[in-house]
Image (cartoon, rainbow over all chains, first blue to last red; front, side):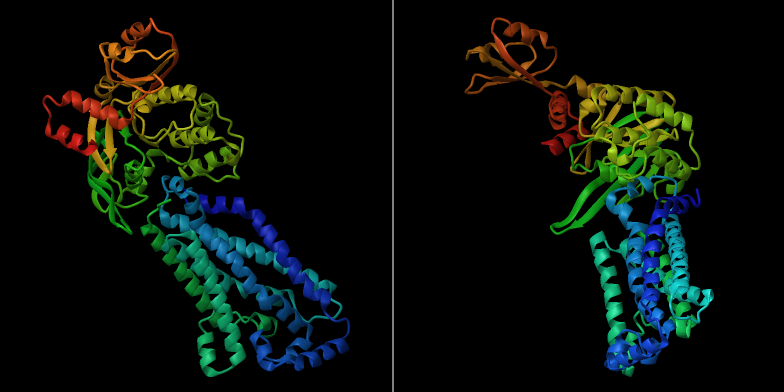
Length: 271
Length: 316
């Protein structure tokens, strides 16, 4: 019956939403606690950052050292700067769970002996993990709002700004999830799928980091291939979502999801 | 009416040593209301056949139909009317079996829970435990419940009784006969004739991917025999006299004086022939499936048909 796999996946995974959300909320809360108490302290912090090599700062997504002298910039860098990298772990696990985990365990033999289309398995699971992602994002958002309340310095950010920052991670996470789901339906072995997905995230991150550090046109062109280049988390609270990039990344994620459906239709369930 | 038919069904896997034919031009027909045994040693291609029938894997050549529908094109419609138990049942370990049953039931569009509880009671199965807590036999029972709970027109069971105790095997046999009496069909795969001979009318025998025979079970079991090993308290020259016992052949005596022989028919003449000696140990073994078929075709050798000759070559 339509929606059964979607609901069952959510029923079995609601604890994961809570655990991931809680863990990342604590991580979101932390930058607010370590913010300097006084504006003067922020200025001295800026002086310290100024002493760093600009290419190194760029490598970590900081185009302007002055950005770190604001509470908004500090929170953006400390939390959002690494959020997509962390969420990629969730995305790879979820992508594997679309088909590969059950196939590897031999459960898919039972599933596909039931009156259900193969594409239905893929789409309902992908949708369930997307809903889970939004659940995690919501809990993270609550963590950011709580942090905002305890920060020693006044922060000029609204709940909407925090929401925008959180939503910025969704397209990239979905792309990694779609990529992993697609690879897992194409390659024979789960371990190979894990390795390819891991290398995809790692190479993507390094491409972005090196591209930013180099700062050349050629490096920038190569950097565009990285999902992290389109994420730009460190400056999200200052610059907001780059909607064109977000739509492109989201479109690729949808295409990969459809690719996973097509590949799973043809797949031989051999375990 | 044929419920299950295959035409030249073939599955070839590429391997490092070249193409490997797991199933080779299988032509099979199973009738409605029949319990059909699909026999063969491990690795013969039984599970590969079932996987092709279920559209889990696709044939390299040939085609199959179930319930009058194409196994690939009408897969969804077929799966609404079949129940399947895989040889190695894997389920969600952290879930309670009642949750698994309800989940599978929802995918099927609903399930009669009264019937599920009835099945569980007959199989003496506790639905409230988590899957990981079950023994092999209990997992088998859960698999049977999942396969049977929608009262399918065709049950496809891969090694269904492995892990079940003898009492449960009897219950299983009874349940299969009830399914048959309701006009439903059972396709039952096994590597042991003794496992299926109580309920199957016909069996197909697969060897190295090829169907070497389709016979009535009673014809096979009639040709069946036992391997008997007897140890006496003293070394006697009894072997020579046992050779003259009706039904006894292939008598040999080892260094310890243990006599091995092949017995076809009743035990009584053999027991009477041994009654003057003190028997320390007596061991009776069922022959392997291949030995049964060789015995069967030995009996047919006087007037071998083309199929028989082919089968004997395959088994030799």
